[in-house]
Length: 419
Ligand code: EPU
Image (cartoon, rainbow, N blue to C red; front, side, top):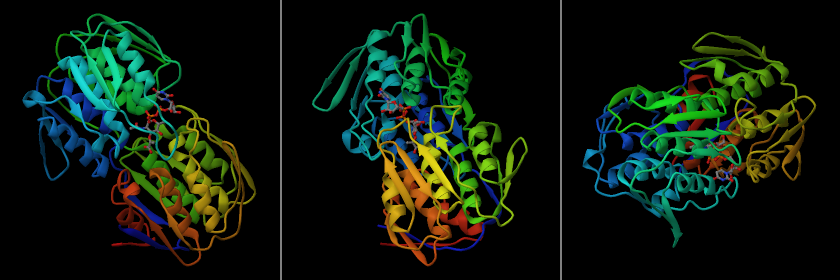
């Protein structure tokens, strides 16, 4: 297994490009199953989760053509199977996103039930409940979700809690349902809006995406289109945090700062000088140590859970005491134990981590446990004295395109070594 070796101590400087958003690309690729025509998806990041999705679609008989710029052309007219096997779903929970499109367009789906994962139990009960309410006959047996429906029916869905992929699955299913569906207490994440925009370009009738009530009027069929995925706000935030932790000066281009308001506010509180354009964002720490901040994660537009681990890393070297509360997932603090091995002073009490900043971390061999936890270990490595070896970096490759190249471009001393 590959490792990343990071020699800490260099303030990051320079400019890099932000890639397309993983969490928008995944639902959009699933949405191509709804279309009668060819859908071409652009600005796709080169990531493991994308390859897994392509394999998932390919195994169903869907034809995919990828060009050298990662535009993916998807033609689902050759589909033969409506099946998502355990071996793929267990490596990528977002595979559940094929459930809504398959049952809505083809009337059947057999999708492995994702298990718990490193950040929580993560049930998909709300995806299932929503589809049943739309008239699907759903059975959960032998670890699989088996769904059937002649034609889904529009209905009023009031979500018990805000779920991103749940909202996406039901919104996709509703595009081809008979009549109108409303999703109340819907997720407002920019990735939900991006999916809605792509579906609209395919001919769907959707109103209210980006608010907590989405209205979808079913249509008979959807057409092909060409759609570019929005920039990755979590990748953007991760490099901003990397600049903050190292006291650096970094500019990120091809992004959308307006999606990062909560993160930018916290970075300013940490002492960062931030300049924003429409498509770029610049952070300058002027060589200073960050100030500790308090963070509470919540659904968009509040502070994202996907940035919690990276801010925990910033806090452990910051000046002062910070309190980080995780409210979205029940077990998203695996990075804390690894950071402690690097000399971090963190007290974990339930879903709250209290950090007391130390002047310097010391390098240690550490292990990545999930995608964002891994990113936090890389950030810690950037400021630790000595060589930090981050193991199990396949987690990072699931969600960060060319992380070592991008960091090296900013001056970091980082290399990948085969394990
Ligand atoms: N939940 C339920 N029942 C459901 C669905 C969700 O109880 O049927 C709970 C979850 O267990 C969790 C909360 O609701 O406690 C929110 O989970 P959500 O469904 O919103 O998460 P998700 O859709 O599975 C997406 C992202 C995650 C991101 C979360 C929260 C994708 C592919 N994944 O997951 O991204 O953390 O929303 O913003 O969009 C990542 O990129 O590292 C990542 C984990």
